[in-house]
Amino acid sequence: MNLPFIDWSIIVAYFIFALGVGIYFSRKAGKNIESYFISGRTLPWWIAGTSMVATTFAADTPLAVTEIVAKNGIAGNWLWWNFVLGGMLTVFLFAKLWRRSEVITDVEFTEARYSGKPAAILRGFRALYLGLPINCIIMGWIIIAMASIMEVTFAFPKWQAIVVSLIVAVFYSVLSGLWGVVFTDMLQFIIAMVGSISLAVISVQHVGGIEALKSKVTSIHPDALNFFPEIGSATMPILTFFVYVAVQWWSTWYPGAEPGGGGYIAQRMFATKNEKHAMFSTLWFNIAHYALRPWPWILVALVSLVVYPELADPKIGYPKMMMDFLPIGLKGLMIASFFAAFMSTIDTQLNWGASYIVNDFYRRFIKRNAKSSHYVLVSRITVVLIMVLAGFTAYWMESIKGAWELLLAIGAGTGLVYILRWYWWRINAWSEIAAMTSSLLVAVFLLKFTRLGEEGDLNWAYRMLITVGITTLIWLVITFLTRPVQREHLIQFYKKIVPGGLWKPVRAEIKEELKEKVTISADILNWLVGTILVYSALFGVGKIILRELETGILFLAISFVSGFALYKNIVRKRVD
Image 1 (tube, rainbow, N blue to C red):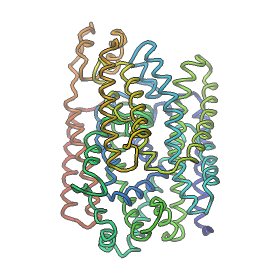
Image 2 (image 1 turned 180 degrees about the horizontal axis):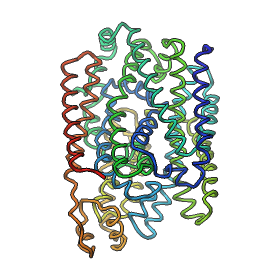
Image 3 (image 1 turned 30 degrees about the horizontal axis):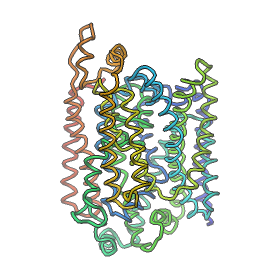
Image 4 (image 1 turned 120 degrees about the vertical axis):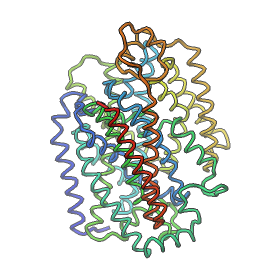
């Protein structure tokens, strides 16, 4: 397809900017792996938080939302909306603890928390497991989404689209490390929001406005506009919804929404100036990610149902709306925003994955005490290696939503360990090893050897419940059958992190007088209030957009009151 000159100019301008940022930060990122992977721990909260938001807007996200809405209506988004609960838990219970740990990766944290050979084995295993196969699956669906967009916008074959996408991303990522990623994220966030809002407004106008859209959508998909599934709903069984809101958010490891924080979200917290900036960065991320950003995507998805009712692949509806309805200039901006989103997320995954391979495997087990320049060079080589493997993964992957569900399945049951390791002294390295191993084995068995492996939201819900139940039972049994972490190591950990919760035996052995008893009741209260704030804002914005003004204003009022209460609580506590 031939784009007008102005559209090409906008796209080229973005690439020139990104390349300039990559070159500018290449020297700064090359000082040592701390600069390359966590920006020297100097980021303010608003840059770190916006980078989290930008990173979670990959090219796959609006396409996946379009696919979800086409199949399950608006309520289908509870597949990821439920993570608000875990995200706010990270804000108030874990952000300060992560920053206090002063590690480079969350995998390195395993040897800070646990001791001996089990801790070393766990660190090495998680570094390779998360850095390569899991990371490649994540990047695979991101590349698929970008390839789908390029197929529609430029009429590229899939393999050519993947190659072009990889070359663009890997060159920039190798140069700049996390420095370049977070600063280009700022621009990416702005142009992505402008582009997605513009597309939503123009799309709704094309079908005659909101009221006309609602009428046409409900004639095609009667349950499409429901925020919650109805009992007996064919599009989302009530059991599936129950698993989303009552089980998934605390029990399941998922990139960007790990219970207790982790992955590239933890990476941004490590990169902040201090605990206060770590907390506010994750708070801003959760508000922007869940309350502000979804509705433009959802509106375009609803319009695509009306405009392309017979589309074989529903996720393609989003880029088709871009190309069919955006005017000159905005079309180039929207395509540039997808390139920006793609590069931001891929760069994060590459940097994050390479940090595991280099910091937690190569430097820990292969070559210790080498020069900083050596580790930076190995990091850059590792980025290229991961990108190549991700390209092969993407070529054989078919469904974005299916890949999401696969990761949710193999991480089911591990989440509670990642929460309790901060707040219960008895958790040990074998707890995590047992949880990861049993979750993977149970999930694979159910997928490959039972009828529950067949497609369908109900089958998925049963798989989740069974996997979480068996995995939780196994890791609890293993925890009590194995020795606890060495007491001296636990004391050292406690003195550094000062967590609340079940640490009485450890506290009792600390000789010097502790300043005060550590409690988490205020943090739990803030978590509840923060969760109400985000969900109320999410529903309020949606109801107002859909012209249900009274309900929308009520939700926004609840959000405002929650925000004021949260502000008072935070000020009273005076987080330093």
